[in-house]
Image 1: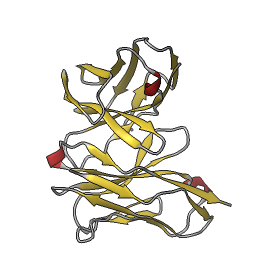
Image 2 (image 1 turned 45 degrees about the vertical axis):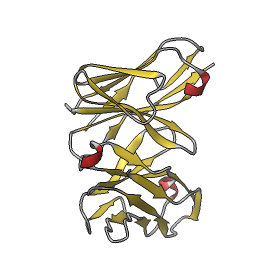
Image 3 (image 1 turned 180 degrees about the horizontal axis):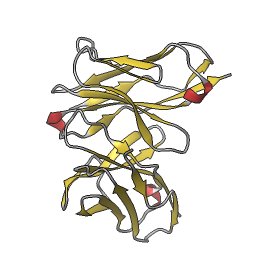
Image 4 (image 1 turned 90 degrees about the horizontal axis):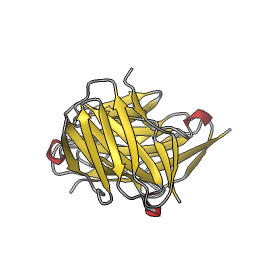
Length: 113
Length: 113
């Protein structure tokens, strides 16, 4: 079946540090890939997405590239801010799985000033 | 802007009570979803609906039921609340298609005592 594996957290960084959160997936079809972010006390919101191999999603300085050969969709940001502190979820959606999202466990990011 | 609203942010109920959680979306989305979120377990799909009066079980449907009488509204019902149903409940909606993102409500934190 489909699954998503993310690096465990929490990840603690100083402001302006480089961020990478690893995400790998297993899927039987050709999934779309997503990163969602959840700020404290809120629901999830879409951060970025990619719908086919080699697509790069980007938003608010975050980037992720859909790598079919390594089944990965790692999230990166060149310089994090305190306001980026949140929980980040990698997810996939697959036609063969009925368009439902399969989520990773989430990675807590804490950015210190 | 897409809006998904949930009837309560916080709810406290007693064991054995019948609990209704309501979700409304304003973007004419075909799909609606109910998840629960627990620390260390990420998001788990309870039920989803791809059309009015249509529903499908997710990964953890036991102890829950749902109702979708109108396209914009999706209700989650706990027939007899138990303490192990204490959790954060998140509603989401989307258009049909694996490449469409889901839009989430702010969540309802339910405590069953």
